[in-house]
Length: 159
Image 1 (cartoon, one colour):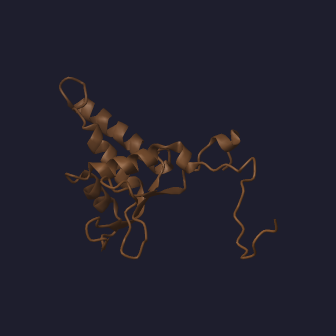
Image 2 (cartoon, rainbow, N blue to C red):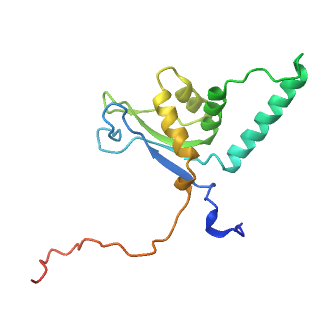
């Protein structure tokens, strides 16, 4: 469905590929064959994210009704964000930064949750969460002006 607001809307049904940056070298992690490590994720504004938020509100309301004070129990926001990001994670190519070996772990919501919540993995969770939250990653714009391209010809230009 096209929005009456045109290009203002991000394409939140598309995934965005987050290339994983090594926190020590600031370089993109790559496997032994030079393929970058990545995680494909949906937007925090996608239908899946909105469904997660709706369920979370329902859980909080039910918890508040059951509590003595009428207030929901203290919910760990980080844990909830990890659960949400796990639901939005749709694929990956994980690489061990020490050996450059591909990690053969199936991309499932359960494995994604384990990846994001394991102690010592905050650096990865933060990278992916930030990119999934950035609407600009899910928007496309046509170029208003052409940019120069390099010639692929082997001929040398005439002087």
